[in-house]
Image (cartoon, rainbow, N blue to C red; front, top):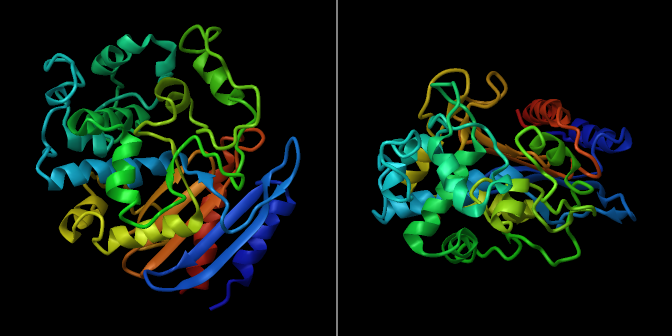
Length: 351
């Protein structure tokens, strides 16, 4: 079992300046097979080397490992059912487009909500009203950050706790995690993301007036990169906001698949395909993400900042890849090919 090609590929990503910094972990539910850090946690205004304990903005990995897990803990406690309607928990007309959707539809991205909208452009009291009536044209799986924002709201409504407090109390602290948390992160060893929010500012301008937003004009470090999370929800929302290290992310995933966070029956339900078609969705996870490369029981999630977590239960293989690919500027099309190459090389190394 040789990881020479993987090591070379990671180094090439750094030397060719595709990505400033990388931490990559490959192993199983019991063993570490490969664990390396390459490059820089920050390039501007000064350089800072990355290391194995660097904390990363996980971006959308928040969805399965914070929000969906929280929902399923409430499901196990019988505080909600997967077929409960959204309007059961949130103040919106039961007959509105979103009010009729179920918890399960939100979890599987089949609620028909748009992928994204800059909620922070609306007054706080109008955001839920927008979400109540928003819809897209798709009847199948349509990835939606807005759906997970609603799930975060539902957790908070049921528990009377902010999402970060619930996760800390019932997921992270019981799992022995000290560097897995919602921001802001005050620690020094944190990977930087974008210089300001220029990328999102340009996209948000298509939806309304953005001048009243106090856009950040500094290197984002320890603050969530995602605009809805930062500007709309003080860094704590169901779609993004979670930070962690590679080692702690591995520990959390291992505990999840061992049935130590939710029970085994619930865990298996979460990682089983609940939808059909090209993009299969579990409850929080993408199922069979790389057809032909890994088993069709594999589950996965990625994050916009340059993060990825893949688990193949058939091969007992776990891949955690954390990077600050959006530092100092966003290159939105970069990571798709990097992730695929990483998986392909790792699969061959562990065959």
